Length: 131
Image (cartoon, rainbow, N blue to C red; front, side, top):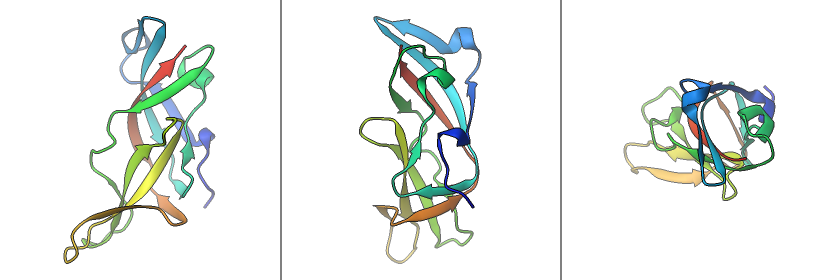
């Protein structure tokens, strides 16, 4: 299976373009529903879609991830398996996956992925900020 790239996203507005696009001050905020295809996530993360593909004309400052702590994506079928918890990097342009151990005896631990992990398709709700 191939590593996921910025072309692995399916992009749509959360509700409607007129409702989901707001201008505050000199910034444009666009609420989006992004679906990441199934595939391999590398330790460096998955690049987020570029400015033009999310309704911004000049630049994309960053993304705000709305559902980062909601229901981690499970990639192991057992109760003591592993899951992925999602977060954006510091600049907000790459989606990082963290391994989230669910072992019942040792509790829970969050750590960066050592190499790659294969995930099923997953939906994210984000806000793109820019102009």
